Length: 185
Image 1 (tube, rainbow, N blue to C red):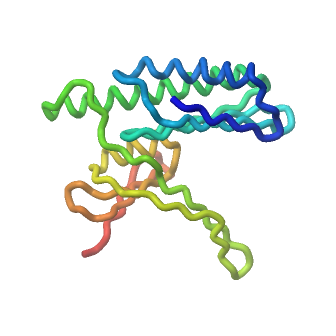
Image 2: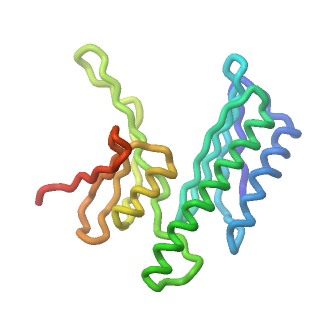
């Protein structure tokens, strides 16, 4: 893995960089072949809280976690725990689904590289679009889209429905259940 470690209000020393690389490198044991993707690590300090955000975009999976703590090294350990839980949880769910369908035992589902995370902010009578994002839609069913949305920690997820070929949106409702938006054809 290629590490891209950035600091905001903090100088990224060699010791911090080595600790991050050592800890995040432990994730390689969950894969048959070591991932060749970039690991984006953002370290920041605000008041007394040290915050770390880790994003690992891979071909079939996007891992993302963030954690805050008063001690930077403790925050790194906590974010590693989150990433490991994500990998185990989704690998188990996806493998269970594929076993039920008779596919290979150790197969990750086709998942999006990135999710739409655009935010619109209304001020007075004008609408300011502060971020635009483009991504490729990959065909998947509703269950896979919900898994990807939960893994990213988002409240909605845009995907191409593998059954209909239409662009759909799954979203998390306030009652904790999920909704699906389909276009009228």
